[in-house]
Amino acid sequence: MERTEVECCDFTHVHKDTVDKAQSCLPAEEELAELAGFFKVFGDVTRIKILCVLLQSEMCVCDLAQTLNMTQSAISHQLRMLKQMKLVTNRREGKTVFYSLADGHIKSIVNQGMEHIRE
Image (cartoon, rainbow, N blue to C red):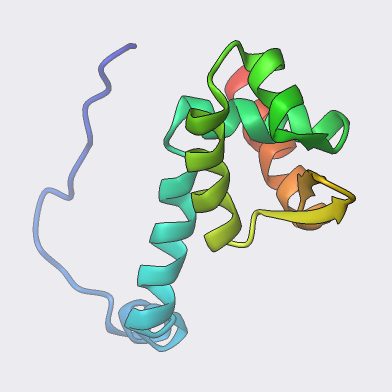
C-alpha cells in the first residue's frame, strides 16, 4: 500500500462556526460506540466470507461450512457474532436452521465496500 503524507495547516487558526456546526452534528458517544462495534464485525475475513455467501442465498451451517471449507463449530461461532450485531437472521425448518442477511442494508454495505476497494 502506498504511503501518503498528511498535509497540515501552516499555522493554527480555528474556524469557530465550522467547529460548532460539526460538534452539534456529532452523534452521542453511545451511538458512536455502537457504530464502531458494528463496523468492527466487518474486520474479520471469515465473517465477510459468510456475508458474501449469504448475499447469494440463505444457507444452513452445514452448507456454509462446506462452502467455506471450515468446521461447523467455526461457522457457528462467527454466526453468533453476526446475529448479535443483527447482520444475519435465521429460520428453522424442521431440524435445519437456515441463515440469511438480516436486511437489505447489509447487502448494500457489503456491495458498496466491494465497489470502493475495486476502484
